[in-house]
Image (cartoon, rainbow, N blue to C red; front, top):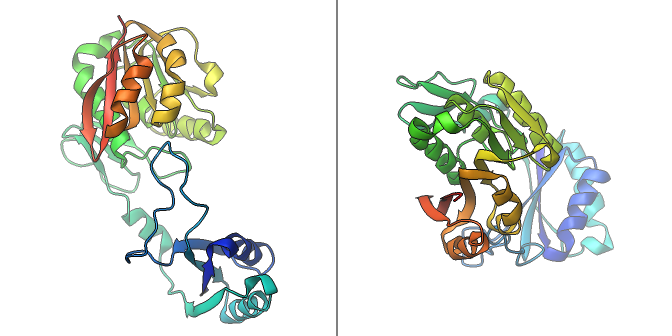
Length: 299
């Protein structure tokens, strides 16, 4: 395998990437900020819930993978001959060292401790000593492996509150379920009749597979699966959709039931409180790396 490295201005990145993949035989193409870790580094994607500040970096490094040096050389020659690519520069051609990519990927995912007795453990790892409740979860297409602070906080809340609330968790809704990790965590702590919904069909399939792998019953489907009210409702999304979904989510919470919201930055607390104030009083229940968990009980 050989990598072709190109330097491209913002207005040429998309055309370069498309040409490499669609016309020049690249196996893959990725784009990086060429000025990363310098004073010229540019924040491209902004904060969750806000529009991107720009359509691309001022200078991007495009890295394309080819089967051999001949294919990479031919692709670079043809690409740089195009008039629209006059500002694109060749940086390097370099061989890719053979590696055990499966082992390398797996090494990036270690067991995640939620509490001393509650862990998330990838299938290739041994369960840590003392773990009494374990979610077996491998990285997949859907969000939620337990490494993100918002997921950890939701699971910590479940483990902390289950002792005195789980008997009443006769129905649970995980709205925006992703991998299904929150639904599975609730099931392991005694919840029954769990509905997990997402607008992404891939997330629904991921939730079904993960629930089956963990031996817990979860009903996964598109949002119309949710019906009636629930003693416990999770929504780990982002602040903007949480704000827009306030009437819907509050309508799913039983009287006396719990609403657990995540995907909220510290600076967004007041706007979420205001959005939900007609129905309930949200409070900050946890914080982790600038993210907060907000919860409320339906009066």
